[in-house]
Image (cartoon, rainbow, N blue to C red; front, side, top):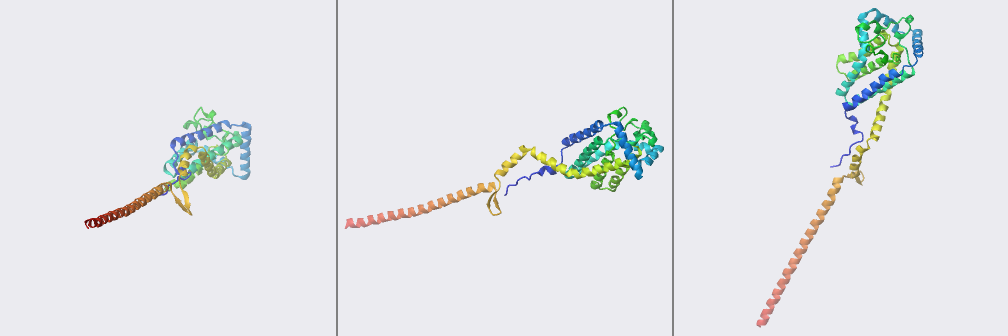
Length: 336
C-alpha cells in the first residue's frame, strides 16, 4: 500500500483556536482604540478638514447629515435610541457576529472575514492619522448642528463630550471622523449575515443594519455623509487586500515552523523511489522484495540439495548392489 505524504498547508482548513483568536482580536481592538487616541492631530487642522468636507457636500447638495440631525434633535423618540445604537452596537454586535462565524461557519470563511475586518480597521487607523477631521457636532453652532449625545446625555451612560462612558471622554479621539468605521463595521456585519445567514430575518438584518447605522451616524452629528462613503470604500479596499494578507500570513507561518516540517521531510526521505516509467515502489514494498527473493533462493537451494541427495542415495544403493553381486559371484567361484 503506497505511503501517503501529508500535503503542505493541509492545516489551513482547520478551525483557528479560540485562545489564539481572542488575543489577536484584543490586540487589534487595542490598536484601534490607541490609534484613535494618539492620532488627535491639530484641532484647527481637524476643523478645517471638517469644514472643507461640509462645504463640498453643500455644493453638491449631498449634505444629508443636516436634515437628519434636525430630525433627531426635534424627536427624542428617534434621537435617544439612535444615541444608544451609536454608543453600543459598534462594540457589541460586531464581535458577536465574529464569534458566530467562528463557531458555525467553515474555517476558510471565518479566516477571510476576520482578516477582512482587521485589515480594514488598520486602513481606518491610517485615515485617522493622516486626515484628522472634526465631526459636525463639534463645529461652531452657527453651522446648525446639535450634539445629540450631549442633548440626551442624561438618558445614557455616555458623557457630553463623546460616546465613551462619563468621565472617559478625554480618552477618546473625537476628531477621528474620516473614515467612519461605524459604517464600515456595520457593512461588514451585513455582508457576513447575508452570505452566511439562512433565515429571512437574517437577510433583513443584513440589509437594514448598515443602512440604519449610516442614518444614525449622520443624524447624531457624529459623521458627514462623505465619512460614511469613505467607510464603505475602506471596507472595499480591505476586502481586496484580505486575500493577499492571508497568503502572506501563511507563507510567514510556514517559514517559522521548520521543526514541524522536519518529520515530514524524514518520512519523505524513504518514500517513493521511481522504478519505472510512472511506476513507484514504496519503502515497505522494497523491504518485502529482498525477503521474497531470499525465500526463493532458500527454497531453490533446498530443492537442489534434495535432488542431489536422491541421486547420491541411488548411487549408494547401486554400489551396494554391485558389491553384493560381486560377492555373490565370488562365493560360487570359491565353491567351485
